[in-house]
Structures are given as structure tokens and as C-alpha cells.
Amino acid sequence: MAFTSELISTLKQELRASNITYARIAQALGLSESSIKRLFSEGDMSLSRFDAICGLLGMDISQLAQKATEQRRHVLQLTEAQEKTLVGEDKLLLVATHLLYGWNFEQVLAAYEIDRFEGQHYLTTLDRLGIIELLPENRFRMTLSPEFQWRKDGPIQQFFERELQSEYFNSSFTRDGELRLVVNGWLSRHSLNAFHENIFRLKKEFEIAKDNDRHVPVEDRKGTTLVIAIRPWTLEIFSRYARPV
Image (tube, rainbow, N blue to C red; front, top):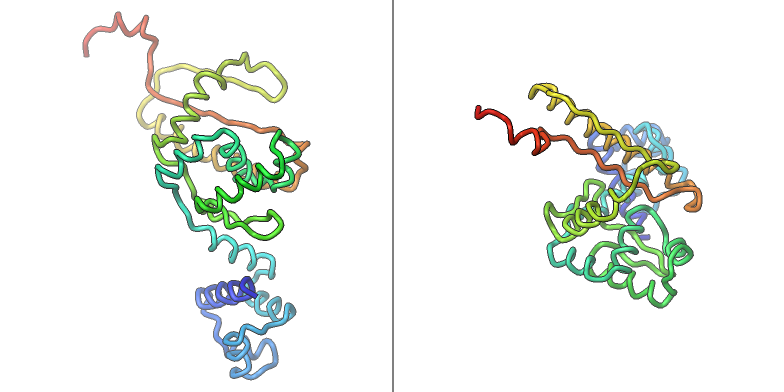
């Protein structure tokens, strides 16, 4: 019932944004305008009527449900204390990041040495931290916005940067699925800015691929990290001989 109310609220917002009136809906559904108003006020609407009204918006009910779900996800950033709690316990951080990747509770238990009682404890902790909304039977709803980001130079970012330096780059990048490219040259500010834009586009492509692959079984996916960096830089053994500018 609660989600039905959210669907109706989201539907109203979409109708207002598209300037679709109750009169137009009434005409499309073959009902009186007062009947349409009553449907919305009482929240008693059949799936077929939901679908018909969504049709006026050029969407289906699943797309409406997705919009309603996205509106629930509003947390853009955690507090420093919340991030410290996550990095303070390895398994809690493991569970949190994998839920962010789109895993469910059973998939986490199957892949890692975490027993059910432990896992439930971590779900409860994440609910208390406001990262998820815990539902019955170990289900959950993420509360983080699609635009969510870790705090800049916060506990999580510092943790991953340490691991990046010590663990991620400790590789020859020659195994299956690995690739490392390093190119050097002298670029103008204009060219640097253009590369920045291209890098942001590539980041977006990675996010799209990640979302598209959520339906692929976990065993057919690999945890993957893309690191892209660019900056004006010269080897110290060269720069020590540079003439003052």
C-alpha cells in the first residue's frame, strides 16, 4: 500500500510536468473528471488504469515504478562518522560496497565467508547508518542517490587510495581482462581540457555498463576497477635539469 501511494505521488508529478490535466485523463479513460480526482485522492487504482495513464506520458508502469524508487534514494553523501564506521570493520565495508554494486544478501553470503547471523548484523548496522532501508526477510532498499559520492578526501577515499597504491598497481597488467596504457607528450591547456571531458564520458560509459550487467549472474561477472589519471608531470630526473622559467 505504501508503494502504491508513492506511485500515485510520482504519477501526479509526471502529469504536472507534462501539463496533462484530469480532464484529459478522464477523456482517455472514458470516466468523469470527478471520478479521476477520486481515484487519485483515494489511492485506489487498478493496474490497467495505472498503465493507461502512464501511456499518456509515453511510459509504462515499470518505468513509473523506477522513477518512484529513484525518488526514495536521496542520500548524496555520508557523514565523516558514517564513513569511519564503514572503514572500521572490513566485513561491514565489504557488505556495504557489494550492496552498492547491486548484489543481494544471499549473493554476498554465497561468495564470502560471512555466516547468516553475521550478515544480518551488518544489514542492521547499514540500516542504522541510513545506507539501506531494511525490509523483511533480509531484503533491503538502497537510500543512496544515483549521484551518491564518497566524501572528498574522506575516510573511504583515503582507504581506497592507500589500497590503490599498495595493491592495485602491484600488477604487470598482463592477465586476462587487464590493460595498462601509459602515453607521454606535451599538451596545451585546450587539449588537457578536452581529455578531461573524454575521461568523464568514459566514466559514464563504465557506469552504464555496470548498470546494464546487473542482470548477469554474479558468477559471470568480475569485480572491476577502472583508474584513469592525467596531469602535467615530468620525471624528476628530467625536471631537475630544467632551466628556470
